[in-house]
Length: 100
Image 1 (tube, helix red, strand yellow):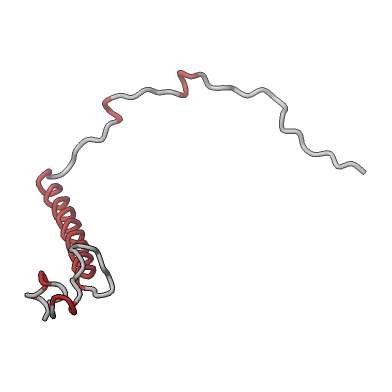
Image 2 (cartoon, helix red, strand yellow):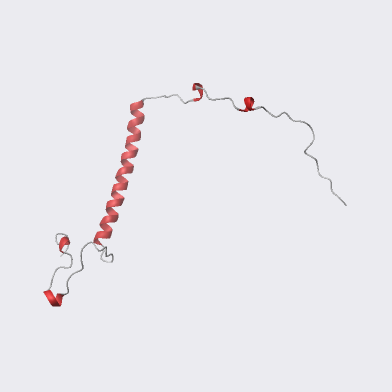
């Protein structure tokens, strides 16, 4: 047994022309400024300055963690000389003010 479905192709429909579809842009379509410019600018600058401070804090804390972590070796200086040849020397002389 066959099931006959509904046909959706019947009838003629109005196809809008390009002129009807495209209205065109005018100056009335642009947003107009409202409110105080100074208040909006100060609010925006507070947001941007806070974002800048958070970024600087994240970068400096990351650099400090890598710098003071003993497991990380970044090759910032030549390796230490062997102790048996030259006696006991500090491992990182540029960190002498921070660590002993």
